[in-house]
Length: 321
Ligand code: GLV
Image 1: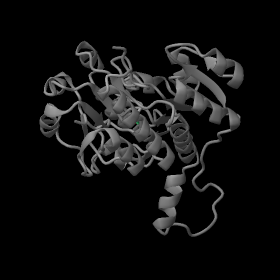
Image 2: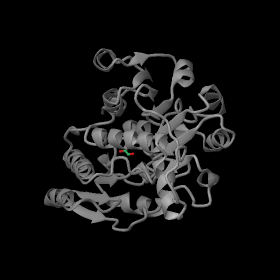
Image 3: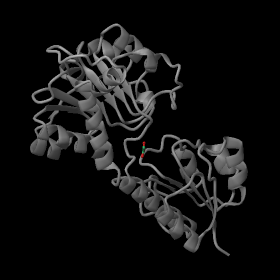
Image 4: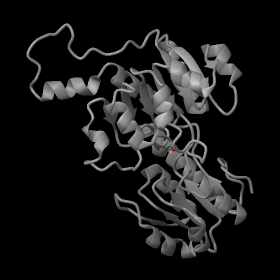
């Protein structure tokens, strides 16, 4: 009998085809995620679970699946999964690092440029039929060359962002759990303390995991130390930024602009106060959304779940069992 796997959302064809070769697969094929209670029922007889960042995978859910041998997340971030609870139950957890690094850094840099040069405001201006003449001072933005980019979190994606910024002649500062001598030598990035990064950066881009330490890292205190013209770019996780404090900082001109791929809450309701501000760009968590990246992510998640149900080590593990 094939091992039973539950997949919480539609996967690219090629990944699904590989999974059904070895597993008996049940898929939640809807646009919206399965709710928690349904997921709890579904894992009851499953050997493996393929999940997304929208699924809450906690200890109770794991206990509802007594045969669960692996949890395979189709994402690099996994703050939706209680990994210590999985480890305590000897359940390996897998993720999909590496294959979305360039796509995510490209998008973070696209947001940086769009905010600096007010691209979205320009589009809105034309669509609203306000474009009547060429104006010397129309929609003036900020220079990128020569500006200082502060990178918070110099992991894979942070370093890829630094590489792009170096190509645009930006000065680079970073904070990170560990120093990255390679990025310092190759890209000229300077390791600084958090306050220095806040005070000196024209642009700040977030590339940290969501943890107890990073939740709310950007709140009133941090915004108070940033430049009045500073641009904040978040492609990491929404709750790293305190949404209320961000609203106040943007509204009161404590900082200049924000460009968010991720928000708190997520999805952001259309009547949220952040969406009333002119100096913000918000897009729906799409930084890794290229066909290639998403297909590779799904393939890695399938490789993880197949290994897990066979009792083999995961090729891309989060925890060590
Ligand atoms: C997307 O946000 C991911 O963590 O892969």
